[in-house]
Image (spheres, rainbow, N blue to C red):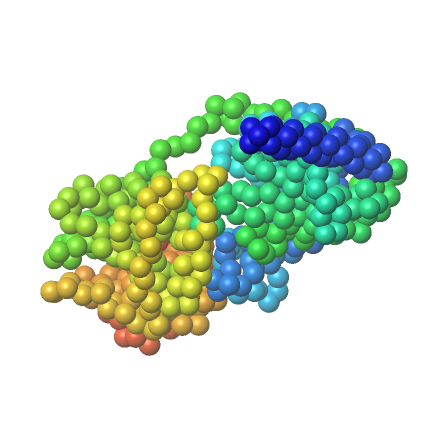
Length: 479
């Protein structure tokens, strides 16, 4: 009897799934008919581009830049897209991070199949890590969603404001809402992120208008990690413009460079861990090690920790000092938690970090996901001193900083070394520093803090760029 019941249940479930798939197909076909069946599309407009992962405080929205012109062309058959935009910084500038560019910043971004690249000038710049997301963005567009759903055995359920269509493409689950007028009003998916884990990506489409027989939204708002990253007002749409994209040879043959860590001894028991766009500083205490900064992600942190253990093989990394919450400086912290280190950070970060560490990392499991541990914190309000015997690190909040509201700097009094992030990036041609030169206001505020605290600095070990004598900073600020 029990066996028969299980068979009945299985048949009901199978029938329900079949009906759901059939209903989904009918709904999708109705939406294609209502919106217009296009093979390619181009839409243009203006709006805002918000700088992901660079908020002023850990709970604030991403800082805004203004898009003066935007055009995106998508060819669905070739799975290609070209995005062109020009943005300007708001005046007065907003608080928060991101790459300062001054004036206008022009971007041309491509994806074609499994290849992604930027073309800021004549030479293409491969973007190996961006291909999966840019390809997925094609299927998050209104017309692309309909095509991908029809090709991937989508199912349907009733939502609060319409029919919710779901399908999988590769490892990504995509949901979309189609309203009673058969317009796509929302899509959502999840992307892997070193900080946020399985990060929600939601795009809202509204204000549909007829553009030469094709209906397309006049408002597009995409949010990542809970805050908008793109807010676009669409003013022009072209159906079937076509897009001919040839993948440059330099992009086809590009491969990800290995993580490179170059240690430079700055004093007895102090090493500058460079070799990339972001740096760390290792400090040896009598019975343990402390690391200042864990940038980018797991790969960088694991390589830096390996170099630390090569330099000092018999001591654990007991503390990780995190200067601020910006994702490029926070992305590798989870690896140190997995290794058992206690995190020293500004007190305003702790609640946010605890929530972040609890988020699932199933799309791209990192060391902490594979080796779960509870994160331990030492919160810093204005000053904290890590000390053992004759070694100490003084940790100070940088008050009045426009780049980040919780940013801290570290000072090693024994060696007169200042470790700081983003407020002063030395002029070092050929050294990768994607954040670029910092605005003068950041340098002036750093000078103000050093004078307030009366720190006797001989050397600056910046977390971007190269180690320089303090006189380089004095020249920069005109002292």
